Image 1 (cartoon, rainbow over the protein chains, first blue to last red):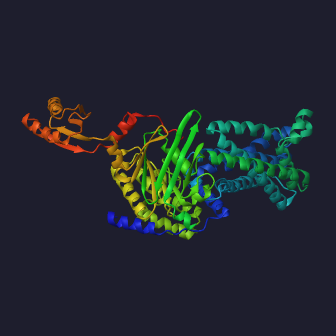
Image 2 (image 1 turned 90 degrees about the vertical axis):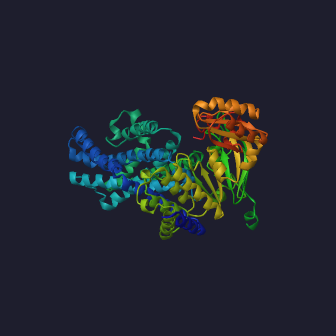
Image 3 (image 1 turned 30 degrees about the vertical axis):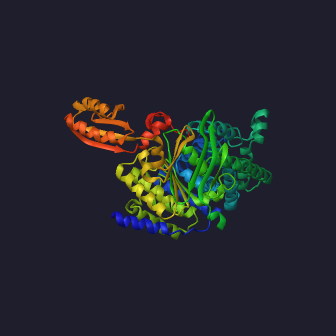
Length: 272
Length: 327
């Protein structure tokens, strides 16, 4: 294009001073979700965690512990699948923080922060895509579980309710990681801290064994561990014996996490 | 509303300050930028330019002082400010993982355009900025010049009243740099006020209506480029000899004629001298001829901004290698 034409084109583009109405919070959230989906389009390998983890975890724990704990792998699968599902999804939430920690160092965030938009939408939009990721991971595990012989007595409805409460918790717990990702300066330290929190809370729970088999001091901890409540809730729905007390606790804990860590994340985000 | 729109100043900052621990990155900056002009903030790395911009664009809260941008307080009315400004950061404010088109559509959507309108606007701007062919490529594969152009294009999806450009040409080749300059001039012609930071004196000289020279977080001089140059006083004589062998002799002849100290430039062919009496200069030309010294350039000019900077800070502009403290 010749220089003169280009100057004209730029002038014409500049003369268009259309100023649309401010984008709604929902619309900006969806735009940010779209951004995350485009990233997956360019780097599909990032789906590795949500496809490989469910398969590896389910096979590994079922066949490793099944015989010893429940006498048979088939019986153990029935008990352990909801637990491993919880553990896998909660583990995967950690990557939300790591992705954000990486992302936020980029120049584009300066632009996001100077746009007249509802500020949290950049994070909420990303978390919405994460919910899709968690759903995919859960579906993969449930399908594999079905092939291996897992049958939910709660039926399809039970499975869906179990997934919903799991997704609510996963969404809420993600705000802990977003907060940490604003504080931690490197991906490595963030990973270390996240692991330090996640390993004990997921393993020292009712995921693998019934708490009654543990020493009383450990049982006391397991009983108050939020992961245990979540596992009870999910297991209850899938087995067709809903544990409403656990569901209530999980809901309260989830809301609490959002109320505390949501604003905290945004406070840190604005200062970063 | 009308009252605010009639406001004469795009930016009014008083005593703006930001400290990072012990480091007083910005230490009381006053700025007044008239609407519809290009304002240059000139200073070496680490002078506090980026930190100043980050405060004015609501990215950083000042530790002291106040500033109004287009009539709105940068702390109290941050939202109002954000609706009227655009920032093109020092490091491309783009998503490297997405294509040029995807970036433009995303930002258009965030600004409130419908998907269709965002796409239309993106196409219009990408074409105008000569990026249409590269629209489908990921930004990480763009050259520096393309990236800058896309960055500016993204900043004017909704024509801002005030555009901040943080070192818009750092690292660009001369051709891309000229393109960016042309774009900036067109922006101002279309009514946008531009505040740009630069460490290139030449750039401030070429583009800016007014310049603030900033060093160690303080404005050390302010004015048009002509005023800044005049403040240094005398003009400068610039001589280029034909052969480096004869430079020493030429310096001797020159010193005798104009009776001031002659500096030898780093270029082995160049001599410079501050002169106060221009009559002596014409004599120097004759003296060279008498001494049979061949010269290829002989010019008397206003001092360059480089010299202004040197005079103001007591050191050359590029003498500081401290990293920008705004990280």
